[in-house]
Length: 135
Image: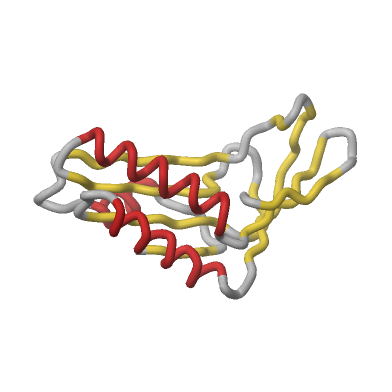
């Protein structure tokens, strides 16, 4: 499962999508909108994605699956306006053992942030804002 969506994300949904009888470990990563960045108060943000983002996210998932001994993977990223505390990304990776699941989940999030064309526009408490690549 690889998705971009404007609706709120569900940790339970993503974890269930990664459930597999062969997975002795399922590692879940939850990225939430925090109230600060680089010493400034954040009041909210908006995620935008290039039309190729879903295909690129699928490519990243396939790369992680091919390079790690995992049995399942699910990831969803939000688009649109998000408030403090809302979930921006949820990923789950199932593997026979925890070390593999942790490594694959970390690689998935790192690769997603580095290559999937999703950008965030942060709004700060002082009224300024900025665009950030590699959400």
